[in-house]
Every structure is written in C-alpha cells, then in structure tokens.
Length: 163
Image (cartoon, rainbow, N blue to C red; front, side, top):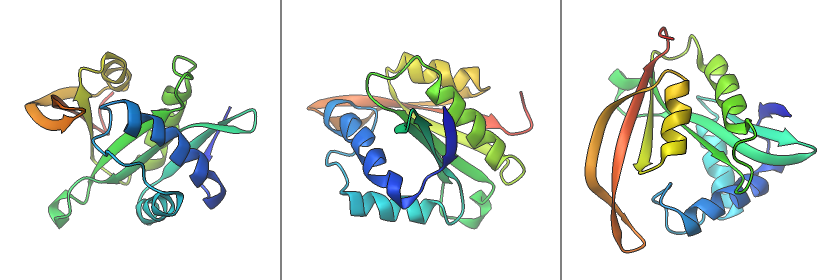
C-alpha cells in the first residue's frame, strides 16, 4: 500500500470511488456524481491550500482523503474539514486509517482544529474518527434530505495538539 498526493491521472479513479457513495448512500449529500473534469477541478482547487491523498494498492487507487477549508472567513484559517473515502467493498483493510495517518501528518503544524461532518447513522465512520482522537461536538437533526428521507448530521472535532 502506498499513500501519495493525488495526481491528474488519479482523478478518474477518485471519481469512480465517489460515484458509489453519491448514487447508493447518504454518506455524501451530493445527488449527481461529479464528472471527471469537475472532480479534477475540485482536487486542484483543494490542493492549492491543503493535501489530497490517494491510497494505491497493487497499482489501483482504493481510497482517498483530503483536507479543505472549513469556512471562508479568515478567522477560520487554522481549521480544516477532512474526509476519507474507500472503494466500495474494500473497507476493513486499513486503507482509511493509513490515509488519515498520512493526512494528519501532512497538516500537522499548518492547522489547529480539524472537523469532520458525518451523516448519521454511520458507526464505521464514527469509530474511525474517534480512533483518531475526534470527539462529537454537534448533532443536527434532519438537516439533510436524500433518497426521500431526512438525515441527521454529526460533527466531530479534533485539536491537533491533542492525542
């Protein structure tokens, strides 16, 4: 397994991984899978300020993780939001943990607070984030709607100086 920065050659694989989540889950609230071009623009935009990493195993992209600006106002400049996605059917192999380990190493020193929004219920995502020292700080009832149902969203936070 190799964790490295995302390149333009990886964007189609990233888009394919994300497609499953858009079309089949409430993990993301997007309802239309971004085109490869749109995803490439997103990756490029995010990477101007923060890392976007991919996990490659046996020559195939099996997951990705990124940090992005949490809010636009300058007072939030030391806070990032993180996300991790693993190819459908590939969870439980350590890809998400490996991606987050490298992502947190990459943002260490450049940010103070890290937040993650999780559509609920999602016990696997909650467990992953809490393993990395995140603690739940908010629970919003029925703030998203996808597939004809209301979805709660929780926010988890980690301060980079904490274990």
